[in-house]
Amino acid sequence: EDIEDNDDDDLYSLIDDIDEEEKYDDDDEISSRYRIQPQSALEIEGALGRDYSESNAVSLGEPKSIMLEEWISTEPEMIPRVVGCHMAWIGAVSSGVETTVRHQLRDYGGELLLNVDDILDQQESRTSDEADPDSTEYVPKSSTELALATARYLYNKSKTASLAERTILIVDALSGSSSRPTSSTMLPRAAAAYRAERIDAKAEKLLARLAAVSPPSRKARFQSGAAIVLANDNGGMIEAIASSEVAAELRFASRHIAAISRTDAIQAVLKKTTRLQFIHFETRRDVAVGQEARSRHGAARLKERIKEDARVLPNGNVDVSAFVGQYVDVTLLDDCALDFVAQLGPELADSVTKVLTTGTSGQQLALPLARTLNVPLVCARRDNLELSTSPLGRVAYADSLEVTYQSKHYGPGQQLFLPRASMTSTDGVLIVDDFLASGSCQEAMFRLCHKAQATPLALCVLIEKSYEGGRDFLSGYQLPVLSLATISSVTDGYITLKDDDATFSTPLP
View 1 (cartoon, rainbow, N blue to C red):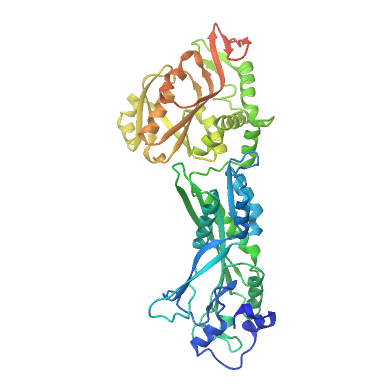
View 2 (cartoon, rainbow, N blue to C red; view 1 turned 30 degrees about the horizontal axis):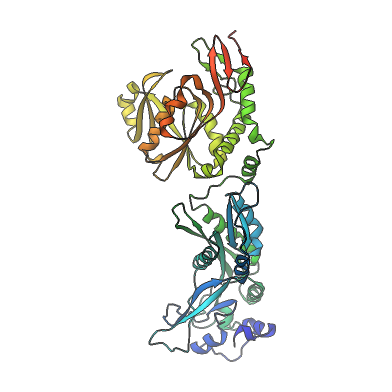
């Protein structure tokens, strides 16, 4: 008799009543009596280890959600409302982890507009020519298959980025249960393997009753699958799946344990596509609102430090070693990194997969910027031609890409080296440096990106010396050049900042 037709007492008897009549020798009777049909919430695989690869089977058709279809019929605006989010999402995740998922999506710039919890898996019968057309055998789907089918359904209905999660409960059969029970007090159905595709109250009741009649070491496994479907830039679709599993002894197993594998699988699938970029939501929000948050103070603080501590050296160079280089104001550079993220904007920031820089001072800014964008930092090494072509240099740079350029301050024959494996054709690169003067070093980093077949996206520099023409020199690349402070001239020891009426000087002692 199916579980749907049994009351609680009958369900209890399926698990731990003592059946004085041994019927485990009859495979068909045990399978038909104790197997719960696919239409119910639980799937019992059977005490005798039935083979589910038979062609006479029931498979899943397209899922369906009445909640989603009614919502779509209202023609809602698929626009995120949360400040700092730029992508709308539709979800089908367990209500127990919905709040967590909302926060996870916000770290990727997404807002969950709707979460549906009424997904129904439509059943389709298929029979082979040799099989009895009146009988069906359930073919279990993996959690990732169920999740992907659900995510595709959500996307096809809403044409909006979709996220789905499905978790399956599995209790493995006790050893020896495929022939005769290991204990005279345990029925074959209590020692059987169990499977549930919904972790609901009925599943938890089953776990509790199995725990009462099973050895303490018997475990339940929660297998979670997550899938996303979203549009790509070419009008096609991006699909990604991920899975996670957690196991617990039956006496501790519950939907709360399942939440661990659910959230792990969802976090893993969000990380799988380069279309989504992790940036802490607080940073996204601060950047978006443009308020008196730290992200608006970086440029102002930098200009104040230039006025207070910058010096003009006898050769005309501007020395900022009081806060960048030899002595580092780390909070200032953290603020500047947030300011750059604000200038880049969410779309460009989400496209960055690597940050490239060279030199000690460049690394001091590039590190907090890479950390804010949550991407790796790649450092190109600078050397001169004479050293790089020496026997030791040829060994050190044997597996590196190289470019040669002429530096105003270091002279001709300067080279930059980049390990070949540090960038690929899929990388979007943000180039970072402390100063933009003539632009020769930055242009060399652009060429390194092209040699690695990566795509340079923008250049961020702390201070631009506009009178040396670096911006014009780089204009042929047609890439954004961002700076937080611009020195328009240095004359007779005096520094003039652009957009600042004050001309100031901090002469050498």
